Amino acid sequence: MKITFLGACREVTGSNFLLEAAGKKILLDCGIFQGSKFAEEKNFESFAYNPREIDFVILGHAHLDHCGRLPKLVKDGFCGRIYATAPTKELTKLVLDDSEKLAQEEARRDNHPPLFTQKEIDRVMDLFEAISYEETIQISEQIKITLKNAGHILGSALTLIESENKKIVYTSDLGNVPSELLDPPSLITDATYVICEATYGGRIHEDSARREQKLAEIINLTVAQNGVLMIPTFAIERTQELLHDIEHFCAVSNCEKPTFYLDSPLATKVTKVFEKYPEYLSKTLNQFHKNEDFFGLEHLQITQTHQQSEAIDELPNPKVIIAGSGMLNGGRIIFHAQKYLSDAKNTLLIVGYQPIGGLGRRLIEGAHEVKILGKNIRVKAKIESIRSYSAHADLPQLLGWLGNIKGCKKIFLVHGETDQMLTFSKAINNNLKIETVIPQYGERYEL
Image (cartoon, rainbow, N blue to C red; front, side, top):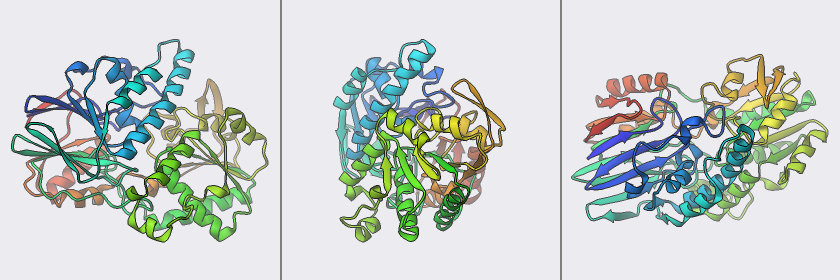
């Protein structure tokens, strides 16, 4: 059995791992590399393996950095099966459809072919086989897999692969606890090797009980200054958590002002998928909000067309604009940022991970001037962040989850920046006494 690391190696993007077992080749995720542009140059490079030789893909969840190169994979010859939960299958279709539009726009602007087209997306969807949590299936004579709740986004799964008398666990991304929407990640008690994410392996999140208070404070300041609050957000999970919290804020303040705009057609579609799969939401949420609109959609102005999005700018302040993309590397939030960042009475609230070198990271680090769509913008708006909105487990949570596993020989750390991984590795060695490896891109290990 061998594992080759071909993405998310000392970085938080491009998850892609090749597992070779019992004569079969299995990909764990096939994500896009994200940064300052939607389609970074390395996404166009040939895969380090022959896609025609891949037998299966196991998809942990529908974020682009985990599913975004599936269309390129089929374009280059893959025709095997893709295993994922039913919500992940539906969300992947929405995410890829939305991304295809961004790919086309960027291709026209930068004068290169698009990374993929709708034709490849359709072929990807034909290859999906949906399986439920805790359902064990035999994908070949000597390999069986089980998907378990990862608590990260709707339908997200960690994978247990059993073959050659070994148990391999791949976390994909592990969720932050507690979550308003999802149950905690399922525990694994027995594994030979673990491939574990480390996005926040060196950090401790803010107290989640404080986040609604901080959100309310930022909204109230926006009202007091008659300003604009911009929230770049991921269409899946982060938007729904924000909507849930805003609904609570509205219940307290009667939502007289400001006006909230959900300027993301993708997020609107995703929220409908959440409503379709209540069995994948937390038991507590279902118990207390049964048959209710727990996302508070009636309090929102929902924009669909570009014309409606542009019209937001002409409407009076104060206002809150929730728009994608969450990493500020495209989408409608870019146009709002270009317009509003130069005004001191406005605020940009970051609620998700920002890659090194990206616009969001530069703003958090205090950039006084940024370039957006070719235009230099003086940054006078306040830049705020709420880390407890993260959908990733932090250091104590990751250690606690790993601490349940018995018989583990080695832990491979992926999906994290080097400083986070080094801190996490040291904590694992000190607390769990398990060997850790931080793979470089392209490294291959015999298991």
